[in-house]
Picture 1 (cartoon, helix red, strand yellow):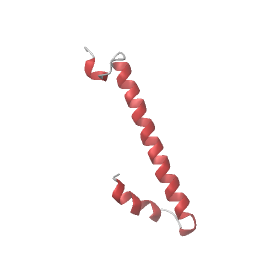
Picture 2 (spheres, rainbow, N blue to C red):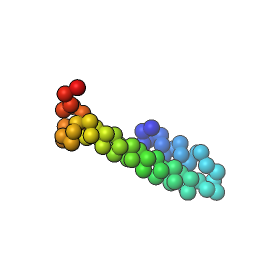
Picture 3 (cartoon, rainbow, N blue to C red):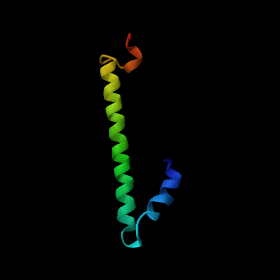
Picture 4 (cartoon, rainbow, N blue to C red):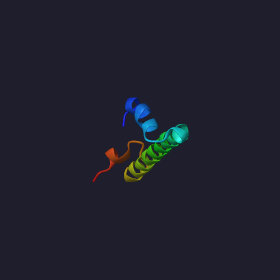
Length: 61
């Protein structure tokens, strides 16, 4: 999801009483989970590349 619609979509998902907490929590958790997945992908590419800084591109398979 791109950042433009996200600011309008998230507050609409929650009732007015908890809107700020709900949208902030959802936004922060999606950022944390997205960043965690990137780190695992980078780690996997590094192990496939036998610790080469070029990652899986340097494998000879």
